[in-house]
Image (tube, rainbow, N blue to C red):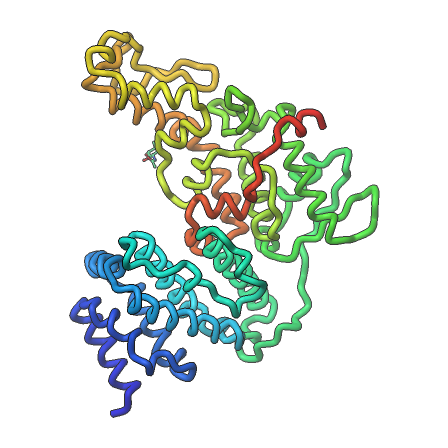
Length: 425
Ligand SMILES: *[C@@H]1O[C@H](CO)[C@@H](O)[C@H](O)[C@H]1NC(C)=O
């Protein structure tokens, strides 16, 4: 029996016995660090790990956050080498599920390392994958690293889908990168940017959204790459302006959110979702001054009071005071009605009688209900339309690799949105 067999037997055993310890052992064996074993051994290991049931996954995560740094380093190196090998040889196309599993495992390690106590942490630079492209030394913050890998993955996933569709699977055999790319063309008038854009997105075949975007301005027939940037810049500026009627604004007019009572058709939000998806897919940073709550919701993370504080510090901080700062008797004396004031309307909360006040007993429930109303319930339909549009373009599995902060980073960039300049324009 050769070593490959042994490893496969071990993998099978680990699966049957639900024994994640074996998975921790294997990456320290030098044989799994050899390139010619990536396909045979490393990928099946990655898939087996990602297939673990919830209980086994939980104990695996615990192991990972208490692992010694030198062992962690060995693990990271093995997965990185496997990834680099696949990327360099373009083999990932044939082994896409395996590669995705490798990224999932790297993510587990990354999070485990983040949770680990200081003496057991490995430097984040261990996670850099030099082989992917440009200089990773430029990536300073830890989130940048994952953004970077994940952006690559988004692009890869798209190219994969795209090329595979065009070649009818032929690509898989030939690994031919020179397939001519069909396009998604938007032809718009600068003077009727939103109207033209939304009309064409509405008529676009959803299968075409993942194709290369080409923007043409009617006034100017030249086709350049600059057009795309120009297009996103101006459409988003027009969308954000009060005139579009798409959003509500916070008190200081620094951020936007979905309105509780939309005046436009729900379909507009679906199309706006497609537009945002196209921006991400085409690597265009856009002006989208949403609170983090939006990006949380896109990756199924529940917004919290922190998100409320970000969007509306006055309301958010008052809620925070009620919940954490005021003594019970003060809360009881405040006589705050148990209802939400949001987007210009007073809303009674379900299961509470008219005239009921906030007390020290129900304050927790009150704050939760407030945040849930503002960031979830009041926008449920609109947000769901937005999300549906967004994921018509982007692959939900891939986007779910992102932390909300990272997703915001890749979509909006890190610069603060300059609302004053925008208003002057
Ligand atoms: C959002 O609100 C709906 C009800 O409108 C509820 O079913 C859902 O659980 C809420 N979502 C979250 C993340 O709490």
